Length: 145
Image (cartoon, rainbow, N blue to C red; front, side, top):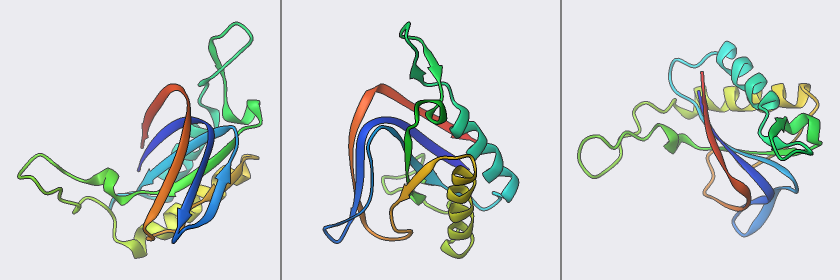
């Protein structure tokens, strides 16, 4: 499982011109699932994301998690995170899990975040989505299981 984590002041996702998910302060997560991902991978990454200390404290140090700051999550499925560009000029997506495997794990991931007390907005799995993001500083991380 591979998740790109971006700290956000505000973010939303649209499908066919309609906003389907929106957050104010928090994290945007681009979520990729590969063939060998399991529920244990989902649990590990959900715990890691919920508790990453990437928000500043009073001294300006990254010392608070999204949970501690009352932030929200915008979770967007992103099979292209497993695009392999090493050969040729067209990415190969063979490492991305098929939708019938990936969607249940993506939904479980969002559920695990909610179980940790987080508000989670989402896009629509498998849809063509437009993600709008106002970054909160240059904070972008990759979390993998």
